[in-house]
Image 1 (cartoon, one colour):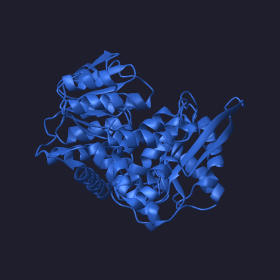
Image 2 (cartoon, one colour; image 1 turned 90 degrees about the horizontal axis):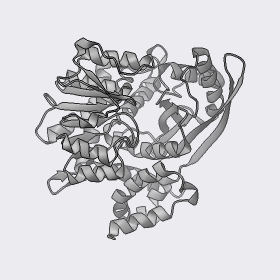
Image 3 (tube, helix red, strand yellow; image 1 turned 135 degrees about the horizontal axis):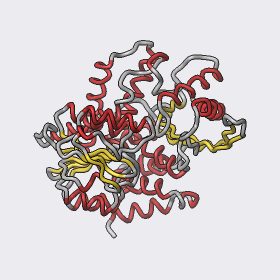
Image 4 (cartoon, one colour; image 1 turned 180 degrees about the vertical axis):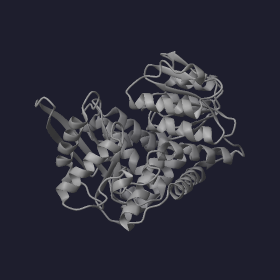
Length: 447
C-alpha cells in the first residue's frame, strides 16, 4: 500500500460509524480524499485544522415530516431533508429534489460535492443539498402546490438570501420553485432572493434553464482547445433526456457537433447522422409529457434501440447526463471500444470508481461533474447577484458570463492537474477547490 492509499484508508476510518451505510457519500469522500490528503498533510496549518474531516462532516442535517392533503382529502406524509454542508465561503447553496428514491445518502454526497463545485466557480457560495421522498408523477398541480407549501413550511426557518439559497434539481423545476418561493415569501413577509431558478416575472435570471447543459459544452470546448482541437464535426454521445442532456445536445449542435444519442431508462435514441434541433425539441416534449422515446418521427433519421445505452455507439465525446453511477465497468469498456477520447460528466457522479479506472487506463480524458456541470450553480450565483442589485442581465450577458466562468473553472482544474504533459482534471478540480475551502476554513478559526 503506497502513502496515498494509506492516508486515504486512515482518513476513511475516521468517519463516523453512522456513515457506514452511506455508500454514495463515502464514494464521494474517498474520491476527494485520495487527491487532497497529501496536499493537506504538506501544510501544517491545514493538517492541524483537519480541514477535509470538517468538510466531510456537514454543519447540520435537518430532517422533517411533511404532512399534506391530496385532492381527495387524504392525509399524506413524506420526509424532507436539508443538508447544510459548509458555508465557509458563502451562504449554503444547492438544489432540492423530489423523488421517491431520495435518501440521506444521496443528499450527503451531493452536499459534499456541492462544496467543491461551488468553490471552483469563484463565486461566494457554500454547499448544501435537500429534497423529499415525494413522487410528483401522477399528481395534480393543486397537489404539487400543497406539497410544496407544506415542505416550505418546515424548511423556511433554515433558509434565506444570506443563509441558505436552495434551487431546483430533479423534479423541482420552474413550477415547483414558484410554489416554494411563494410559500417562503408568505412565511417571511418580505420579498428577497431565498431561492434561485425563479421565473423571469418575479426575479429569475435569463439562461438558468439552459445553464448546466450549455456550461457542459463550454467546458468541453475549453478541454478541446487545450489540445488545439475544436468540437466542430465531433461525434457526441449523450445519455439522458432531461434538462441537462437536451440543452447540452442543443448547444453542441449549435457549435457544429454531431449528437448521435439521447436516452431514457427504456433505451437509446440513435441518429447516425446526428440529431437535429427539431428532434431535440421532440425529446424535450416527450420528457415534459412523461413519455418515452420509443417512437420518433421517421423524418428525424433516428431509431430507438430498446434496452441499449448510448455507449455502444461510435463517438469522440461521451457526456453522461442521466444519473449517478450510470457508467459501470462494462459501460466504460464500451466507451473505450467505441473510440471515445473524452468524457465529461453532466450528471453528478455518473461514473463508478471501477469505470474510471478503465477510462484512465485507456487514456480517455475525464472531467468530473464538480467541474464540468457547474454551469447551473454558476448562473444561480449570477441570479443571486442580480436580485441583490435589482438589475437584471440580458440572456446574451448571462451566456457570456457563463462561458467565462466555465473557462475559469476549466483553467483552475487544468492548471492544478497538469503533470508530465498530461492533465488529470479530476485531481485538479479536487485540489483547486480544496485549497480555496482550506484557506477560508482555517482563516475563520476552530468553529
